[in-house]
Length: 490
Image (cartoon, rainbow, N blue to C red):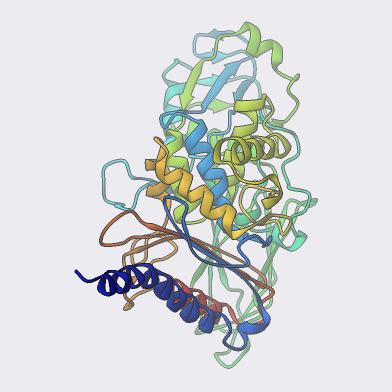
């Protein structure tokens, strides 16, 4: 081959990847610079699983990640806990059992099992054991207690959440959020995501709307101050919670042609809520509790009983690999915070936000190798606006997890476009349909998406797209992020 031909061939081989990279940068930049998003703050990174950066824009600036934060708590748990790790709920009696009568209190000491409630733990919801209904595990716990021969409890039934810190509400969560499931209090006990399902719909014009609760345990009062209005009326129906009065209130107007809907109201005392639910499940099995229903977060209150008395029942949770799925696939905040406190309890001996965050921090720095200035974390779910992470840090985390021996539970939870989960309706009809895995995030003025793009050959690409301070609408923001990811994957 002539020398001139060799030189041209070498130049072509060298320049083609650079030209392709310039083409990628041009395409992505054009999407990012479109109005009105040209005034927002964008952070984007694309790399392969070897860590080679293919595109970046503000990759080392800090952004509010919203629910993409859940990737961190999920990855930390997947890496540090064995996949079959379980939390055990222990049931104690403070007195002897005499001829079927427990002469004392029935104390349920929680260890942070989030799986007492309705939930699916796999994309294939028809697979055996993939889904639970609301009462399945609570009923099984009640069966285990009844199997000990107990027919009457002469004392109280007590929900003991002292295995985690007594602070159950994160200090920086917005007050307006605390009524709802996504800001449920976090203790070592909890039932039905520590929320009650409120289903509501119209009645006849002039009458109160229909409002029902599940579970209906009689543990709060309800005042229906709302009215069913004409079809032409504006919907002003609202629910709110008054903790001091143990009250839920409905007020406003609901047009008569409104569809029935369900919302999920957080319960202010997780430990009491669990004990009430167990009391109801025991009653269905003929086990009577004569004393009151109580709760405690005082670790000393029943410490002597836990030390001296063997538990009547030890009831294991579903394994931690199942906890990770709802955190990532359906963005369940309460699960994320429960797992964060588990990390603190398991690795530092204290089930608190502070200790859980300390475990995450050491994992990101020491194991993943992320710069300590590339993140600042406040909670596990991303509800807090105090979370800050760079796009590069997210990409480094996902690259690390792709190579990790415990990656299966982590990867199984990340939503896939067009499949069950929070990407079900995204990327449809695009070249990326079915090929994008990603954890989205959203709070006011913030949208994010971080995950993997599958390729026909070779390993996946790792991406993180984050937009902060956007004023465009939610749907428009999703469309813009999806356009960016489509260009990244081309």
